[in-house]
Image (tube, rainbow, N blue to C red):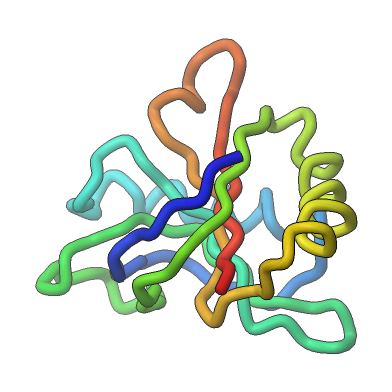
Length: 144
């Protein structure tokens, strides 16, 4: 785990309201994939699973997204999420351990860390290393 600060960025994609590990999330990625090749990204080969706007009923907003420059024109079927500059605790994991990793982060690390959650969204970062046999991804938890 490391703590880093990232600048603000603009994400474009498809957003739903869902619950943790819902089948709606993989289905959202399947609906978004046809749009991905037509979007010029600010970081080729990188996608994001943004999570925020958490409600007491356990639902939250989830967006399958790409980071784009502010002047990128996108399809009207897509949504935009402006991610503020933020500090993050970053955790590496594999897709097969995603649920376990989220459980440890929220159930153990955050309560013991002395950090409060940040105001911006947290996200899954799918970089080039995700396409390796290990399927490594990173979880960025917004912190104060």
